[in-house]
Image (cartoon, rainbow, N blue to C red; front, side, top):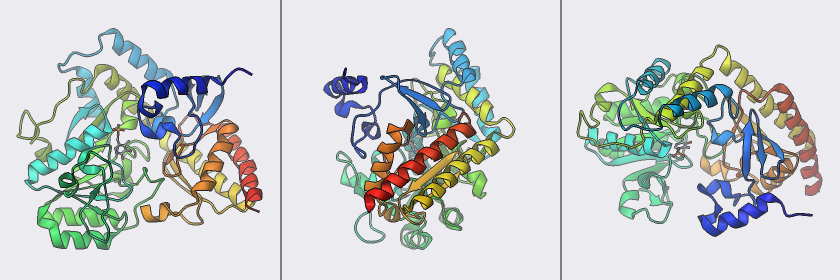
Length: 432
Ligand SMILES: *Cc1c(COP(=O)(O)O)cnc(C)c1O
């Protein structure tokens, strides 16, 4: 038998690219085995280099909300590309796009476009520091805000300690400007504000956490952040790079009715192209250069081709009933998996919101990073590989959320649940 094409390319990749990948989670380190090289994608499916088809629940980690290679997004990109790829000067599409973002998310009184979620969070934090003249930033363990130095920080030992770098190369002095608390720990936030409130520039939070599997905010958590930031004059940043236009048309801020000072967006808003944004209250945003003293810039910011894709994506998600249908499919998947596991006798549960879901090899839905890391990771790995072998591509890590697209029809969801039922039965018999 000839060697699998994925293996051939994996060998070549690892000889030229560190770890074979341009972003770590793609390397399958958490699950083992050879990553699939994706040749093409359409609707709910991806095909690997061996022409094997998979039902995809990664969706490029969120952007593919309308399904892969949606004809309207592809056409918009082609049309824009014909007129030139980048000018480094203002374009009409940027204005239309900003207007569209603002009309959907009214908290974006002013918005600026960048090329990645990391750039958006980095810029939002700098702006918050520049405006307040303070340096401390509060973040929550398990929330991911891109690979910004000051946000690659984990909790120190003991409660309420200043952070430690979670990556080599982040200076301790930088990490010490970040206070790391447990997600959903409202009392902890109260205490940290009581002690350091006057020095806190910003609180940055995923209003629904999607980078430690899926964890929803407990009632009162986001409201508490809003109240404390207002009282102490700190900037509340909702990092909606994942949840924006994914959990609903108004993002998590719309679902929970809590309005941040600044919002970061990415993933869905680019329709699959490198495009992200940050925006919020006018008096904050107008402190950015060229109006104000906070510098921020980008050669390819507002790329005409990326913005064309983004406009098409926003049009698609704004169609009447889009999120109702998406949520119904996601609910069916999450409930179906839960039921299949119950019948198999596997300790498993799931949760979902909009077009996002979490699967947990634990009896209850976790509320914090500490609870998530207690799940049965070995069992997740077996589930992942057994599903992959059957043609279903879940995120290759127990600590990532899953994504459903509008192109995942009922049939595809039912096939997934049926396959999962077989897999859960296998897992249960292995345990015996
Ligand atoms: C993906 C993500 C980021 C980083 O975005 P990139 O485009 O990968 O830099 C930041 N915050 C959240 C919540 C994300 O999910």
